[in-house]
Image (cartoon, rainbow, N blue to C red; front, side):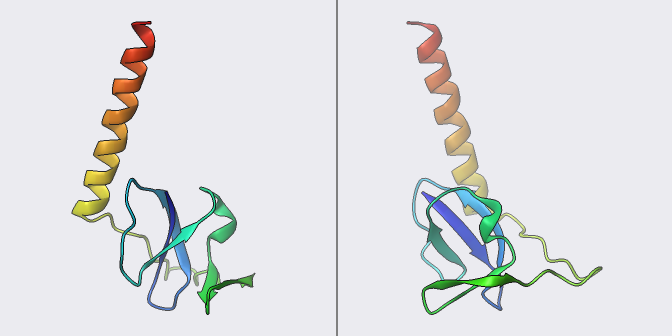
Length: 89
């Protein structure tokens, strides 16, 4: 599942892949892991055509929380298990 991470102004500040939906007002399901969504505003179920770039020196970076880190660890583990299984074929 691909998600766009939104800031308080509903502007996409990052995209990520997760195993499960993060059910809060800060994430929206997207079609692909694509930078197209970055800095676009999500309102009323639609993405803006305009980009809302951060002002220089005022950039907000998404800080991963424990759920983000658990999801990434899970994905990394799944990848390593799959690679190991493929090598043993």
